[in-house]
Picture (cartoon, rainbow, N blue to C red):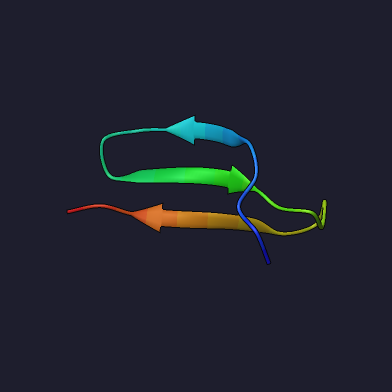
Length: 30
């Protein structure tokens, strides 16, 4: 599963789309 477009960037997390439209990648920062 590859990260594609960045959909959202907040203080704590970034949300990316994937090649599967039903799945997202959440990246948490601290």
